Length: 232
Picture 1 (cartoon, rainbow, N blue to C red):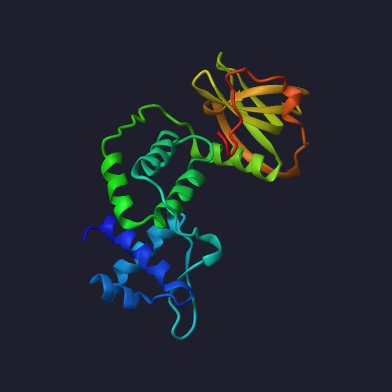
Picture 2: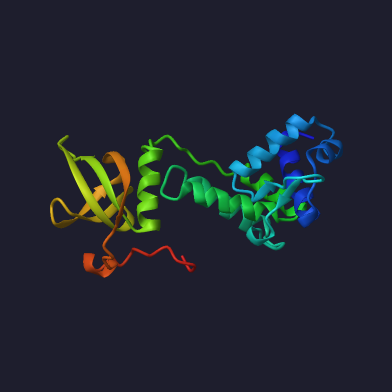
C-alpha cells in the first residue's frame, strides 16, 4: 500500500473507530508500518484539516472529532473531481487553505470506490500554476481581517512604484480583471480604495475592531459579478 492509499485508509479506520479511537500501536499493526510512520501520517492528516486528536491517559489513542466530521456523502466521480478542480484552481488565492481543508473533510467521508474513480478522472485534469500568487502571510492577514472584522495595517506599492502605508477597514474581496482586490476604507486617506493583493508588501492584523461598512456603500457590482454564497 502506497502512502496516499494508506492515508485514505487511515482516515476511514479512524472514522469507523468513532469515539473509541485507535492507538498508534494498533494502527501500526493494522497497516503493517512502524508507530513512527503512523504518527507522521496522523500529523499529515491534521495538517490537511482532518479533525483527529490524541486522547491522553491509559488506553488513549487517536480519536476523530465527531462534531467536526461529515456523515457519509454520495458524490459522483465527476462531482468530486469538480470540487477538487475548483480547489486546485484556487491555489494561492484568498481562503485557499480553508478550501483545501474542506475538500479533505469531504474526501474523508467518500466511499472508497467513488474516491478511486474521482482520482482517476482528476489525473486527466491539469491546472497550470505558473503565476505568482503573492505572499501567503499577506493573504492570511487579509483573510483574518475579514473573518474577525479587525483593522488591517498594510504597506502598499502602486502601479507607479510608489509606496504608502494604510490602516484600513476591510469591506470585501473582489476578483476582477484576473486579479484579487481588497476593497477597504483607508483611514489615512479617508476614502474607499481598491488594493491589489499582490501589490501589498506587508499586512498585519491589529487588535482594533473594524468599522462595519456595508458592501452596498461601494456601489453596484458589474452585472457579471456574483457573490460567493451557497448558490455560487
